[in-house]
Image (tube, rainbow, N blue to C red; front, side, top):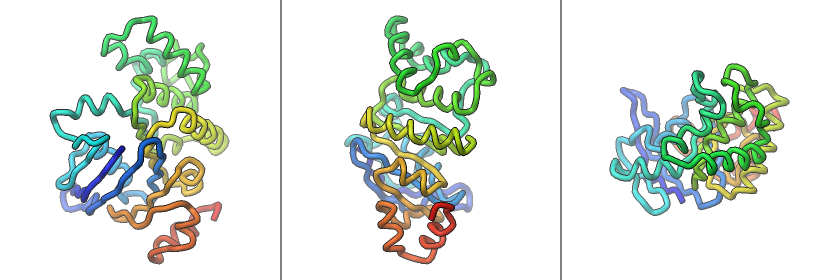
Amino acid sequence: MIVLDGIERRFGTRQALAGVSLQISRGACLALVGPSGCGKSTLLRVINGLVRPDSGRVTIDGQPLTDGNLRALRLRMGYVIQEGGLFPHLTARDNVTLMARHLGWPAARITARIQELGALTRLEQDLLPRYPAEISGGQRQRLSLMRALFLDPDLLLLDEPLGALDPLIRAELQDDLRDIFRTLHKTVVLVTHDLAEAAHLGDDIALMRDGRLVQRGGLQDLRRSPVDGFVTRFIQAQRFA
């Protein structure tokens, strides 16, 4: 589904990505983990075209990502950021349906999709007339996930979607996300600082440091075969380890 080949990106003098190459199979969930500033979020933005690489190539479902097909490919991607990215001046319903209305979906189709995704994400329908400031953080993240899924994308990109939530709400949403991934069989790239969360949600874990892909595999692979002391220290720093 996704092939990244030699992705390089600098911001001024800082090397954000240094020759990252990886492949993600259709229907798989890859969790990107690593310390702050290691390039996880930048890599996610390279995949959806918000950041263009200085060199290297991004291929989505066999198509190289270019200026000519960027809009069409983005319509096949859902994107969720840490704080949800909801527009504060729009109601929950208007936030969720924004792109569908822009694309001219008929009202009946929009209503049916709201009901379908509301049941999937366990978001109460009576919250839809409210504004983002009038609902809880967990509800805002469910709403953001509904918006990302609304056009039925092939690819779901999640950038620290649960990072701002308290532990109890976060644990509940982790279970819900895992159920949603299994139900929909979407290709998912998830950015998180939390190795336990990565192991809970991901089929595969990619550990990054200083813009580079350090190691990839399951949690047990990372524990058994650290390629350097950084991997060991990163695992030991996680509370569950």
